[in-house]
Length: 561
Image 1 (cartoon, rainbow, N blue to C red):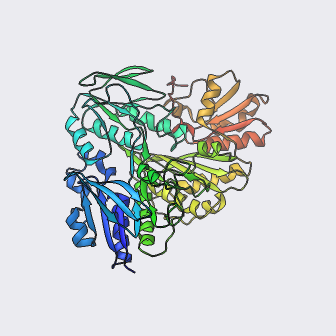
Image 2: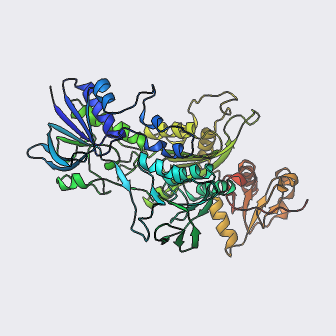
């Protein structure tokens, strides 16, 4: 059946929806419209262009075969008419007509449609602050933004990044690699708030500081000092020098066009759609960063703008707009980022997410090498696995470190999607050979420890909670069960040394009426020590999850014991 299909927005979601609609229904007349002259570009690649990791802008607007995705490409290769420099200004749903404004010729025009797809994306969530119009205050959204940032990335100068989310951190890395002195200003308690729990975020922050990036958390920007050019940011933590300011405080969905057309806006502030990507008008679909979706764990509506999600939604929207039938069930919010040589990722719910939603959870922190420990290049990574306490259902995984975190995140995403519990997860038949993983992969190890916790055998405590107890008035023994040689590498202040090999013969030297928390390098020996103490009748004993590899705070360096 021939259709007139109009797609508003020609980047990740819109371009894919238009192309898919034409493939599904070759007889359809598909028109792709965008206000910009540069279309179908990878905004996720902008930081890598700024850092020179990607040398040419052409790479961001080209296919894997090197063909530039311009209007000629869409016309000749895709059979889609692409109109650039045209801004959609209204939708007449009764007449099925879109009103547009040709920015090049300064004239209005209209396009009729049988089916309409909205893919307007998102915009930076930028508040109004003093000196916002200065030329050295920029956002990270368009190709033009990338060019402007790269031109102003002067080695030795100071750059302030307002926002410690994904975009802010990626541009922070890019500017640091260009030789700038970078400071990240994050209003929340830790970086990647809403993605990582605090224990793992602190490990990331420590790594950034070690690379020379300054991280200021709980930092609120009141304004900028400067009229024609900013010189410093004014914050609650003091003045921060700034020759370049990058605004990366997150994004908001572009919904004005849909809202003015009377379409339903969801509880998240994005366009409400069903599994078919239909809006409240069955002839209008929406996809990408302008839409909300469903979280696969909770069933709740969420706004999680991701290029990967946009692509899946666009495929469904294109199929259905062309008369086919497809469903998009939702998202886990799976996320990954690389900063210098440090990787961080998440899928599903964090422990903080789950707590806010009222879940009773159990979690584990497990550091281990990303491949067999004796194989050259083996690197520790730390996993945090979260499960529902009563059922053992896996709710989420976070992973950080310089090793391969991506495949653990991906395996967990599959397991969560299909409803695995900790028992099923621990039995996954994952690929093993020394260059790739240990015989018991990190993910399976985490599931095993989680099973032990759920069964009541393992009693762990997070490093954050241990530090709170150390800083408080609580009286307890922090028992370091490493060897004397290991302790020379650094200790937690106030800890008591007693190597695991000597624990059984020294049980009577420990007070039975005191709380005892055991600690080692990775948590394994500390768990063994907790088991020994529990079997010997010590009632109030636990181990520090993740050991010193997951301890994101400072250590003391004692003399030889």
